[in-house]
Image: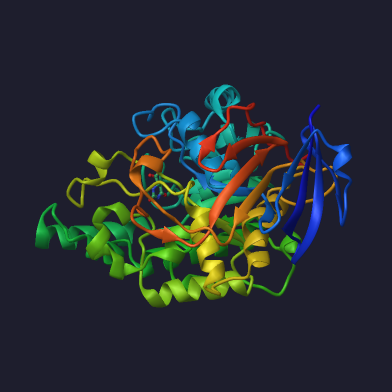
Length: 446
Ligand code: DOR
């Protein structure tokens, strides 16, 4: 068992930033103290001038395996993730086969156990016809469920009201939902197709996947959750008006209805469509600057609980097709942390608050065991970051299999220096270190 001492870092944890030493024994954080004797360690890292935070737990990624491996694999994207300080992820069910049966779930765990450098788990998918599988799946193995209440990549729309009510009434775990009203989207899309054919200007995307589509769907989901008592987690809010649906007057542990925002909705606005085109086509769409500001506000005042990436790679060839054919989604895990730390430096959010939303809150909300905090006895999932080192995103540094990023050419004002997963250093200043694989996440679910 290797003993590693990280000395003199500024620890960002539970609302504080304080200089401390942190000692890793094997896979766990053994001790955190003002001074730890270097003689106790096999390996000492002098981290003066750097900040140390828990690894980001990303509750929404699409790593495309099995079935869509021309876009990405768990091996490729988990390496991009640790390069970006993301040490644990929940992967989404819109793969092929969809993760809607216990066999499909077992296959994913098997693939991840052999390939993932980060810690992993999978949301179980709901469809109009897998209620039996939902009810019978072993709840101790998964963090929760994912329902597409608006269609997106993978044809997983759940739109049967009876099925939805059954799912909401029978599930105790968090139900994460993609909220966009399908009827509204279809109406909008046919109007624009009538005008432009397939080559709709990308700037119209937020009018097609509109504010109304988002609000109708998320408010309906919230209503149903209130009626049934379900634990609802609304993924990737994108509009100001939806932020008003959430509360901030109770602690996260007591909330039954929670919300997530993604990095791209905090970074881009509709003004970026002209330069970036379909590379920033996402579902839900990037919307107005005023929406972006409202999302920042709700994140800061705790109406939004969790910060994620919705990393969703497609090939460049796929993305460069005409509007109606270009798929939505883009790769983010390698750059989400430098982007957010840049936002920290610009005063958009405090570093401590960011750590709460990216690390502590996913662990609390999904009952993850021994992760998400810098705490003795917890897994040593750690990220050392340099708030003074700028870096510009260039193609040759990309670890995504798809080899493009919506951030190419962007200069971030902070860098990830080193990432540890279960005590193993797996990333060091630009290099992935093959030093052991990630673990399956475990939960306090009964
Ligand atoms: O833009 C998106 N892409 N939104 C989703 O909900 C799915 C994702 C994907 O899987 O491509």
